[in-house]
Length: 416
Length: 221
View: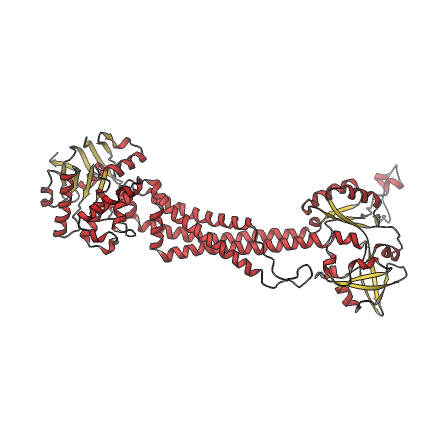
């Protein structure tokens, strides 16, 4: 019956084309919109995964609760203690308690690619009369470069140079601008009430993220000295071989040590909820297009069934049964679905290639082209083809079934 | 063998109107039978019931000793495809297909298109349509369309040919041509022909006339 179905379609070229266009645009929209969103999400995830450590092990700081000290002070009465001025403040440690045991654990763990002990402190940077407060990060540059992609963002100087001499700094672009500093100038760095220490600026980095660019990197032992906490480490950044396992590994580690361990996806949970909204929106949009295409198909096919009542009658009298008749009309839907989604996929693919050439993000080292990130993943194309064909098939089944139910005698007696 | 009908009755609609009452008849193989009667006498209904396109309300039909009502749908369609040909008042050709394709349409069902193609050409040539194999129905005259329709009815070499007013929409000349073809089919191929007509001249060309009046057999059974 396929050959007759094709004849029918060719006979109504304009209607066929319009229905085909519905499916075509539906699948094309699915491919390009999904490509756009998934590409964006992948780009974001890559940024999150590469720019910072995948697991942060931080010294834990909890707040003191009102009755937390009752038992220690009044061991017999602790259920009936009422404080005039309840104890308050910060409980815990400003450093990682036993960094050596962490290092051993991390070295022995096959899932860990690299780790980097850090000393982070809020510091005041001063150049002549200008003072800017920013985060000062002390690290071992070789280890830090393995954990994050900071070296990719270097605009001036070499990241590893912070460890080549004493008191050297690499400033983020934003911090550099606010201070009005330049390379080889000396800025004063002070932490807390400690005396300011001069540091020489030997480099600049630019990530494009203003928060990240308002930071400075120094060698870990220099920062420890400025902070007057020799040998203290308050964070360890970890890079894994497989970043998707980060959440599971982090929650596992949090059980065996007092430190707070958080994975990149736990830290950026808000971004993932945005992704979920995007996904919902994407499906809602595409489903609308495809439902409209489905209605178009239903309409056209119902009309065809009506126009071809005589043909149905004569086919019945020739011995074609209900199944043959259903297939005659259903296959028209299938042909339109397959052709429409096929061309839609191709057009969507080329549209995605075009989108990739559109300039979008700021030019940074990690994103040298600065173009839109579009996913060309095969699964998008499979989904698009399935959705396109599914909507059209559903829309064709009903008219095809009603055609199959027509009995020849009704049609012949009424003269068509 | 042949077509055998006993106690056929048919009522249609709600509330039901009786169209046929107590029809008993037998049509032998190779017969040429005309069903006549005034319009509304039920002759077309009887033709469709005898040809399995319509089902009777009561009674029993046997065609070639097979009980039509007890046949499975698939078997019945197969039977229709191989054993029966239909010609209607209107040609009912499929407008998207050429004459030749229309004639070959029944052969697609049993996948015998290639085998039957020479025969289709032979039939069309015989009916004076040699030059019109690849014309579409709208490019043919009314008489030519009806001749293509008859060729289509004959392509499977059916044992039975059912015709419902085959000349109803044709002029005198074309009517004569079509009647000639039907007579020939009956004579040469020994095809059993059952034809509904209200034209007494054409009815007289049949071997036997069955007359219906108000849904009952009046004569000829």
